[in-house]
Amino acid sequence: MEKSLKSPYYADSLRVLTFLGDTGIFICIQTLIFKLRLQSDIFGGFFKEPNFIGTGTSGFIAYSPHFFFGTFLFGILALLFGLYSDKAYLNLILSLKKINLVCVIWVLGYLLVALFFRVDPSISRSFVFLVGLSSIPSLMIWRILAKQILY
Image (cartoon, rainbow, N blue to C red; front, side, top):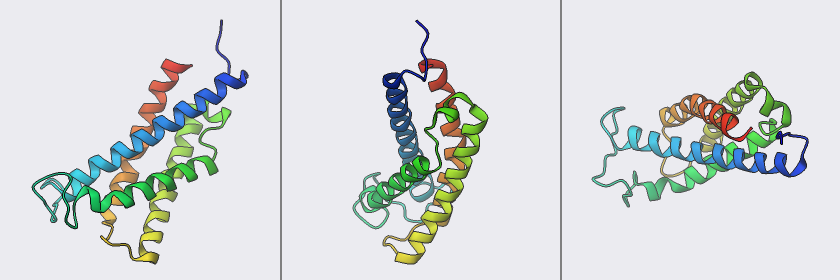
């Protein structure tokens, strides 16, 4: 039996799986860039703490609200720009365009909100740019693999 997006149950489950996968990839990218940017010498991490979790201003716990807001903003933008439409599933070029658009608007929106509300601890602009930049190929690779496996 051939799978089709016209089946409502299959299409809905595909949307949910893709949304969860996109969100998981995005959280992993934020965590990886956080570790590289703020807690290592690779990108000049100037707030280094001996452990990853940390309780000071550069610890994962201090930045966890930023991660939750960033993931929430990404999910809202992905839904608004139709990243989970039937056309985006069937056309990888359209998916790439939508992922690029969502990531660029995410970077601008995240920086604007962080500037407007003056969050504490402050957000590193390079952290936000690196997350936005590295999310594009990561999400595309995930989409290609998911399409090969699920469809």
